[in-house]
Each structure stands twice: as C-alpha cells, then as structure tokens.
Image (tube, rainbow, N blue to C red; front, side, top):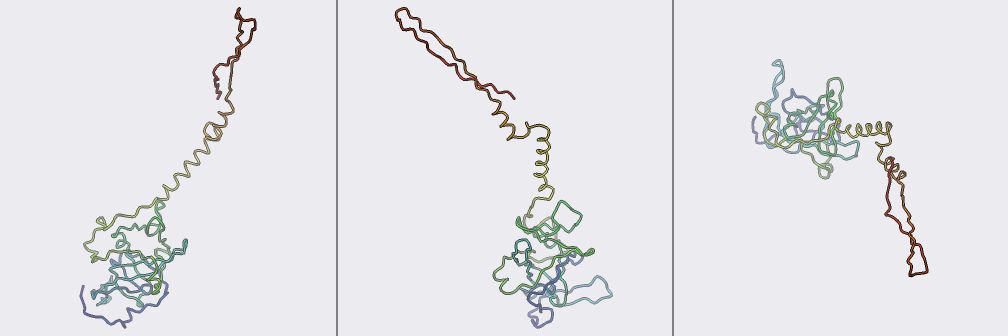
Length: 259
C-alpha cells in the first residue's frame, strides 16, 4: 500500500451517477471488496494500492484508492431504503460495471453470510438483524444482490448499516474466527417449522380421542357431573309437646364425575 498526498477527483474512477443500479457480486477470489458504478465514495484518507490480476499476462493497476463507500438498497418487503456502508474497499467507480463483494470481509465484522444455495436451514443472503435479510439472487453460478448509488438525501436521512470493519483489512493475515463483534443470530427455517409440527401432532391426537382436545375434554367433564343430595326427615316426638313436627336435614352435597 502507498500513501499519496492527493489524487485528482476528476479522475474517471471517481465518477458515479446518482441512482445508477448494478449488481454486487460475491467473489471470494477478490480478496478485498471492490466498489463499482453503484457505489458512492464517502471517505478517502490517501492510501492507495497496486491491484495484481489473476494472470501474469495482464498488467497490474497502480494507485487504486482504498476508500469507504456507500450503496443504497431497498427492502422490497417493507419499502425501507438503507445505506450499506463498506470500509476498506478498492475504488473503481464508473470503470467497473458491477461491484465485487468479498463475503469474508462481511463475516469478519460478525454478520452471518450464507452463499450456499443448497443450505435450506439458513437464509440465502446477508443477515442484517432480526428485522430483515438482504436476499441473494443467482444467475448461473453468479451470486449477487442489486443496489444503487445513493442520493445526498438518502445519505442524510436513511438508516446506515456498517457492513465491513474500518480497521485495515489484510486478507493474508485476517482470521474470520476472531470476528470483531458477536454474530447476529436468527431462527433457522428448521426451527421456524417446529411450531407447525407440534400443531399438526395435536390435530392428529384429536382424531384419536376427545381426551386430547382440551376444550372438548373440559366440556365433557362438566356435562358428566352429577350432583347428588340426600334428604332425611326426622320426626320430633317429644312427649311434653303435643305439636309434633318434622325437620328436614340435607347431607353435604357430593359430586360424582363419570368420564
């Protein structure tokens, strides 16, 4: 990495257009996330680097700025627009038609990322919080989500979600096991199915007997209650009293429940 005193803002790499939509493609081969035409540069502290291509047949790119950049994403379910704020990105701006996102850079800050479309136990996307997930799309083998360049108003008024750590990102020494924050845990699809399984089991038991239906069982118990009383008549035969009278006594009430 190289630190420079200044860099021309008029450089084509810095030009992006408000509202420009493009893909954020997941790419672990790109060991650092790369901001393309759907990002806006927010901070640049003068550090640049040399980007080496995958093949020696191509020339490396010198003086690529390392920046903090933002992109806007709208939750289709709620309509909320959020600003996804990435630190430690390589800036290509309008020179790159799509952006490249290293999922390990997101995982390092503690945000769960599932890029395995065959994993049915987790949401296929980035877990933001308990409210929503940024879902991935897939075309062929390319995994991505779409976002756009935020406007000034969106940067000032929308909720900002930090996606990567602001400390220096060194892909050669970083350890994902030592993430900087606790992972955001969400119920898996499997655990969400559990209440449904319990409900189905109860329905099956009700078909066997009313005993397994709480409401029906209570009604049956009440309808089977028999209240029994015993009336005893005792005659008053005192010789000193010509007026004989009968006195009625009632035993305590007893309950007989037949189930």
